[in-house]
Image (cartoon, rainbow, N blue to C red; front, top):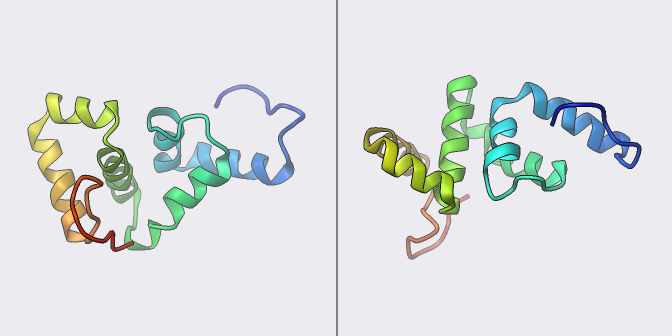
Length: 110
């Protein structure tokens, strides 16, 4: 997300990219999740649809970790392998906000 914006980027996408540079959760989702390289609107929807449950930078970071853990991608595997304590904290936060794991049976309460 560094450098200048290409001419093909619409004004709305450009604004979302500027917001993404300021928002920790959006930067992480953009760079490291399965959404990497997606349209900024997809990333904005992913982050901001759940953001009303969270306040502050630490909560943005936890939301990002919850998204990554739920997606079950390589980052989730890295989190699990590198720090079981961090994985436990993420799972506890996910449970506290009634966010189901993608592998959990039942409905997703978002």
